[in-house]
Length: 200
Image (cartoon, rainbow, N blue to C red; front, top):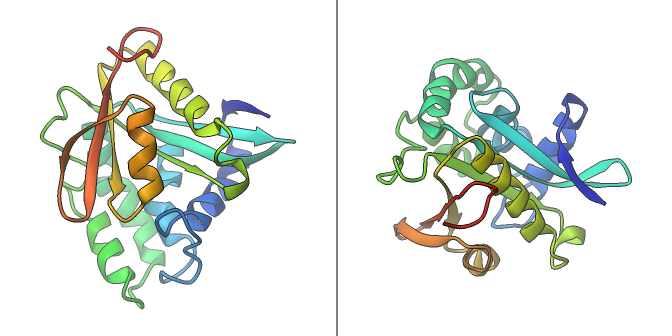
């Protein structure tokens, strides 16, 4: 069991983990137009876009969780809207209630932009299968991601967590994130970085 950089061979597994954890931490299978829509927004583009990174938690050669994101949210957002989403969205047609918010939100050029972007230009997502949770894996992966970003010279990182996901709301403050913004549905958490990945 270890944290390692993702490879192209992990692509399908990363998409699968995104789906199995995509409903406030629970299985989102069948909620969207097809089972790749969610990962095409929140997971697999980070294997391709500017500043992207992906680390996986490897158990016997198979990814059981990931932390992924970008060191440059603004550049990534521009690429996502101009290049990635026009290509992959052709495969997704709205058919369900959840599609009605997911697909339009993906095309929004302001979706990833936060007011505090100068301070926290990176962002990340972390998802672990149930068998990896509660064992310190999440903390280890967050620390590995923050170290990677700090080595790139990034001053801070942020993420969004749904208020309905009680586990996430409790987890992020325990690993050095503080709430910097939010609305009725989502809280934006952020963490300052110093060289080596420690909190500033």
